[in-house]
Length: 497
Image (cartoon, rainbow, N blue to C red):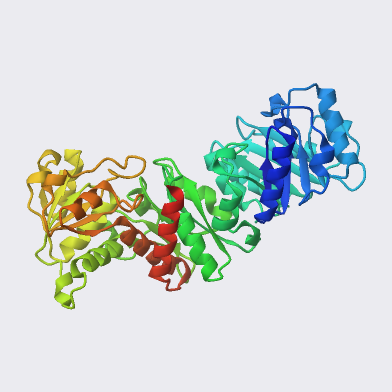
């Protein structure tokens, strides 16, 4: 179950928002009484309540907004219990001062906004002695080890425990706490109304992560990168899992550079079934296993780590096939001639020399294209060109190259820098094919200007849905619908704007 936290300054606003959220499907609401600008009156808040309620009133020391005295706060919590509220949240240091009464269940809680303390287990054990029906622990994640410690605590507790970590790293534990036995998790009303660091919204928990379907048998997948908050992969894969009636969840894992392999080791306890891997880890991923599909060593990058039929880890690069498929579709257009999609002999200019560039470049070389690489950093670009045996041109001279196909593999033009382009408009030539691997937004400035100049275009959406579809098949063995992937991604891009 998802508990939505509601914090408003006026009683009428809190009551109205509670009713509105209930109409949207919320089954449990936390009323943050410390947000009220005047002394809370529990009568109107609890009379005719549309859902069960958790009453919470946080002090400043707990990052709450309570302005009154401590005695007034305790009186408010006792009044909620007398009114028969379903749950009352009591910090560990005051739980002994408020007696159990009626049917109200006691949530005894501890919050640490600075870290996940080394004595986490001792804190939990202490809370368990304070007559709780539920123990709640929320701490700040400084590493993924903190998430694992927290989830292990939830899984091993004899007392029902809601345990998760805060901050961007903590999203993993917020979503997975139910898998390991938490009675519910917490969510915000909306992105601009989050009440704790890293808190997801009710819509995200329900519609993206399908939280209420998560159980002990749920398979875990995810996308690894840094940064990762912008990734639309969770929307794409979770929607596909749901359509296929698969009990899986796909999460964003922010992993710092050079820590990829150690993070995989940390996540062994989660029994992750597959990873999508993005910037900056595609080269390092090659070190994960020697079991590899295709010419990954030649490409110098991978983007998928998955378990095969023998439960062994394998590596793949779905960018490789997805890019070539997208380019061929762009070349062919509406032509009935199959040779229209032939890449052999086509003059191609690639902007960038990262992991995506390497995969696309290798595919083009194997297809017989005449390739030129350019990159802001000369050494990286010239090294890739030498490895492939193709031409290199400096970034400053990229506009003088004659190309049948221009491919942008840089992040230039990606949100929020939507007014940037890696290629000046007057360098574009009518009839050339322009392929931008950036997919947020779909219509980048490069794509807009290319269309204005009479170029054929392929957007990053096409490559992204194709590489994701290939990953989905590796993860599940099922053939997904490209059109359904395309619709999901475009809807996600629209929501993200």
